[in-house]
Every structure is written in structure tokens, then in C-alpha cells.
Image 1: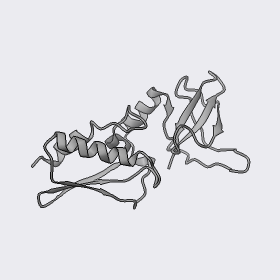
Image 2: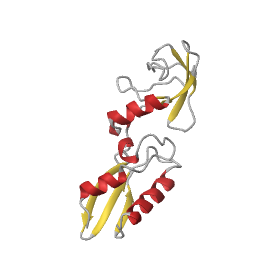
Image 3: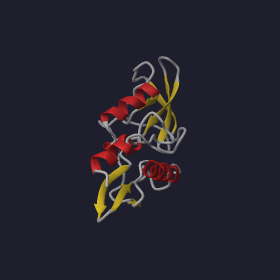
Length: 163
């Protein structure tokens, strides 16, 4: 039986299928690990209830467990408490920025006036660092991201919404 610490190390090698520069552990999707007798229980929480990547993540977890001779395990999906960007590691947020995705701004939660499109969140461009940016679409390449454009370097970029 592998230790919980060894299991965490195995899971840290699983990239998020939509953002491969961060792991599912760094993203905060892996909530808990525990043994119930000889069975390992892996608790996961989706970033949002309709996240299409969760089936791919479950398959990746399954494959990594089998590759490491862990056969007696169960993946348990829980929705409460709901996932939050607060669960992302600082390292993950920096990896997002370097990858070209503006990380969630924890200082100001995302508030959007759906009638006008106005927002009160400062989103820095991950390319040049400017905060002179504009929201162009509430949804980016995935539902957990919004699309912005930098008015300084003129580059479009995804912003990982604060949840």
C-alpha cells in the first residue's frame, strides 16, 4: 500500500486536459485522499458542475493509478463545497500567466453587468503586464475563462475567472 504522500506525487503528474501547464492537484480539483481499509478514495471536485474535462481527468487518474500498481481505489466526485479559485496554488497561477492566461484576480471578485458588459475587475495582460484591458467576451476558450484584449500590446488573452 502506497503512502498518501506518494499518491499525491503521482497525481501531481496529471496535467489538466484544458490547460496542460498545470496539474489537477495545482488546480485544486483533487480534494482529498484517504484509505478506507485497503481501498484508496480519491475525492475530486469539478471547477464547475458542467466541466467537460472531468471525464478525461477521471480517466487520467485511473490510468496513473494502474500504471503505479494501485488497483484498489475509487474516485469520488463531490460538489459541496463548490470549487473555488482560492484552491489554486500560487505556482499554478504563475504558470497560467507565463502560459498566456491571466490568472484569477483574488483581490476583486468578478462582477459583470450583463446588460452593459461593464466589469469592475482589474485584469492584467499576461503578455505585457498592463492593466489597460477590456473584456471582449464573457466566455473564452472554456466556460471558466473570459476573453480579454490588451489596449497596450493589442493581444487577446483568456482570463481565468475568479470563482
